[in-house]
Image (cartoon, one colour):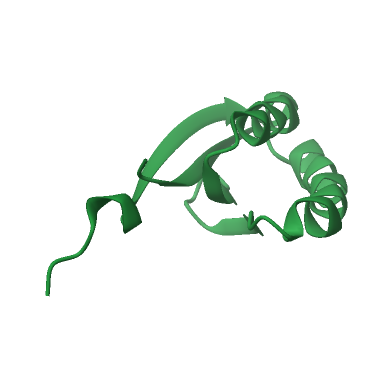
Length: 87
């Protein structure tokens, strides 16, 4: 069975400092094509995962950004993994 390439996902990683995390996540949200954002610490462990479905944008993202701000204050360096839908 052939899969439509548009249904596949691709990932990107951004290395940022703790004080840049929130700004970068907000930038990614404005782009609008991210399906999921994962924040990992320096050891590569996932700290927070934000699913970005159409209905969840308002309900889940605002509290997740508040939690992200608290997590970012504890980090010196981290990786933001963005899962995007191919378009």
